[in-house]
Image (tube, rainbow, N blue to C red; front, side, top):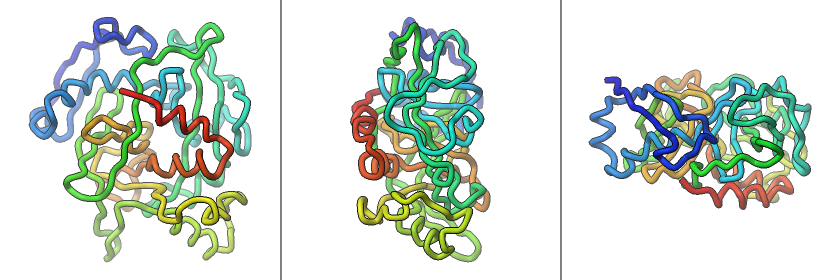
Length: 292
């Protein structure tokens, strides 16, 4: 079922920073009625507002994670605009197309290519740390983004339902394992498994890792989730949130070998990397200070 929803950002108190002062179609999966019945009424009514936390940069979907224009997107999608290797420290202006929402984009954080694309294609089990943090600017200042996601968490089980929110689409599902190749694929992949593949393949591509990741077990918990599987649509760049609309993951795509499963970067993997593997703890503090 499709429902036509008119979004007027000024009436929602959003201004025009996120670029959603427009008429929008929303597709619901399962049906709109089923999603509405499953959710707390206040949460359901806030879904349109939540979509205002989405943005596109150079044709790539992203989500606002703070009120100072901090956007989470995928390194793989933005690869042609990014420098080689990791980036953190001083923001770096990027030569990307701009629009009425922002007139400049600064690269704040990017992991190494081999971490973002670890293991090659988006197969499951997947261990890809495919993310980048950007800051969108307007007139030399970070743009105000009053609608942005706060941090939550998700574990496996039918009681842990999640919503995948993308532009014009809401999908309700759960974080869960599934039958695959005669065995059970777990709901989450862990840092332990990532390092097992690295060492088991002698560090050869596509299982190579930079030094701080190869030694990550000395700095962060080996049980830290990296990716997760959920029974949602799997649109790359969508936000995966819990029933409180707290951010739990960033969708990387629809996994091969994972029928009807989205594969997402787990927010706990982002926390471990930003607060334990890179000198970027201030960025993690900004991310977890977000609020929707």
